[in-house]
Length: 324
Picture: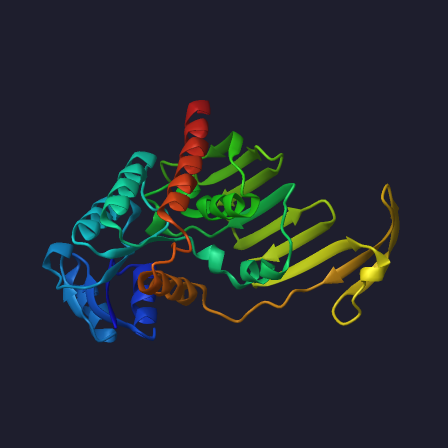
C-alpha cells in the first residue's frame, strides 16, 4: 500500500484527494494546507489527517503537489529532499530555472517525478493509440470563462501549456521557432494569446488560448499527409478523415465519403470515429504514477517533459512582453 499525501486543497487538490481515496493499492493518509479550515474539511471527507506544512506531515511514500504554481518548486524540493515520489500538477514550476533545479534534484534522489499534464490521459487523446500520428499542421483552441483561482500565472502557463505539451508529444520534434501575440484584459498578465510554433521536422502549430471567453472550448485539429483528425477534448470525441486505397476499405467501421483523383492516383475518402475509452483522466494519471513507483518505469509525463513545456511557454510569454 503506497501512502499518499496531497499538498494543496484547491480545485485540483480536492479532486486528487477524492480520487486517491478510491485507488487500489494507495492510501490517502495526509492532506497539507496552511488553511486549517479547508485542509481539515478535505482531510475529514476522505479519511485522512490534516497538517499545516510538509515539515509537519508524517512519513508517506509519495505526494501530489497541487498547491499554487508559485509554490511548486519549494514544495517539490522539500518532498524530494525527504525521499518522496512526486506527482506535480502542471506547470511543473513557474520558471525554467526552477524546473532545471528540480530536474537536478529528481536525478539525484532517484525518485519518480510525474507532471500532471492531464490531457495526455484525455480519452480522446488515448483513442489515438490506434491511429498513426505524424502531424504537418496542428491548430488548437483552448477557451475558458474567467476564474479568479488561477491568476497567479498567465493564460500561457494556465491553459496554453496543456496544448504546448500535447504538440511536443505528438510531433516528437524539437522546436525551431516561436512567434506569439497576446493581451492582458482582466489581470496583469496575458489573458488571451496566440502562438505559432514551428518544429524542426517541418510541422507548424497554431495555438490560441483565452481565459475570458463566453463559452469554453478545448479542440484540436491535426492535419497529416493523408488524413485529418478532429479532436474535441471536452466531449471527448474523435473524428478521422482519411485518404485510402480502395482495396484497404473496411466496411465494418469506415464510412465512404467519395473518391478523389490525386497525384498518387485515385483514392477513397473515408470517415471513421475511433473508439473513445470511458475513463477519468486524473484517475488514469494517478494509476500511471503508482505503476512507475512500483515498477521503476519512466513516468508517463516526465519532469523533462514538464520542463520543456515551461521553456516553450516562457518563450511565448517573453515574446508578448517584448512586443508590449
